[in-house]
Image 1 (tube, rainbow, N blue to C red):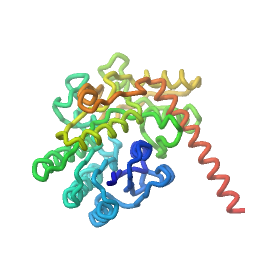
Image 2: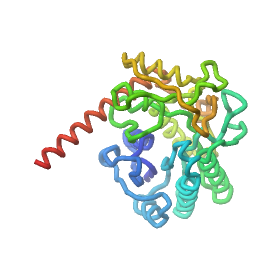
Image 3: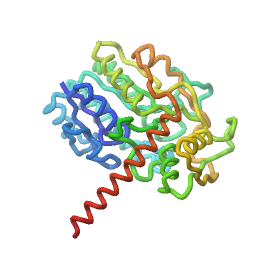
Length: 339
């Protein structure tokens, strides 16, 4: 049987495809390539270019590839953008997920793993935040993901769709083997932006708000290495295949770093100082959010391997350097073709 990975040409999805392929799983990728890249998909894994909301296409993939599990990453993910374009986020994240879930039910897919977010908690009253804490999103992005969580729970009750919902905290870093990483242009992830600034790809880094109720006034986040995150998905797939009941789990390390902490770590690891400016707060950003992740460890047997901020920064920086080399090779090939 086959695992379908939606968004499998994107940042986290491409890491997931490598994790599955390395384990000998049969995989098929569905991605519209709006933020992903065909070259990011592991060699030998079929890529279908299209939308998760295209039910005829999804049904055909499920049928032709014998899909029995779906890992659903495809989504729009930028919180401030969701504030500016809420209907676009509800269409891409919620409506397309509903269409995908319906195809899974109709196609006899047994297992569904959903890429959710800590944004469903909004501005939590407690930290670290537990899975049964109140879900009160403060952005359309958070609401779009929470709506899909609700649909999955109802689909399980009505149709027996076994699922695991994984609520991500701040994903960063890159494949330690250098095969894939965060490659989207104009990405907003803090560590991605910081390492781009180190390498001169950006003139400066903006800190959005330094008046939050935190020790240094900047937002605090729980940063998780992308390789540890995808391993949690692999553990969740094994869990579902054992016949275990649905779960909702946090994916984080249980400790946070402020924006200024991260900037200092990037400067230390890279050995490069760079310009940092203070800017106004962005809409939809909570002051602090850190995961309580014991449930993932106990239920899935998940054991993080890269719980170290310097390691996360190092892998992100190494990938950014690899991207520069890749773009230089592409530009050189294009020049030769033109000549």
